[in-house]
Amino acid sequence: MAMTVRIPADLDAKLEEIARARHTSKHAVIIEAAERFASSESKTAKVLTIADGIVERYADVLKRLEDA
Image (cartoon, rainbow, N blue to C red):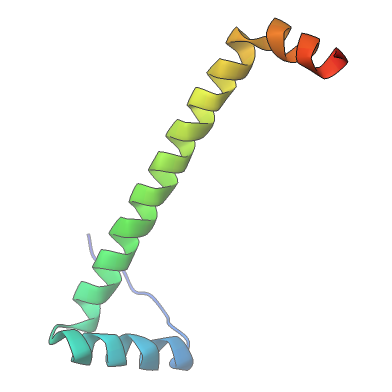
């Protein structure tokens, strides 16, 4: 899917520097960064879902510990 992204000049310069150092394009750097971000957010959502399940499953134990 095509998309236009407006990037501030200072960030563009940093991306250019990274791309040059890696001998790749800014496009490749941005795609890698977006994939890492999406993966991180997905993992965070999974961890929070698991944590919610633990809290529900052990609510009585957590309450007793809180009151101890």
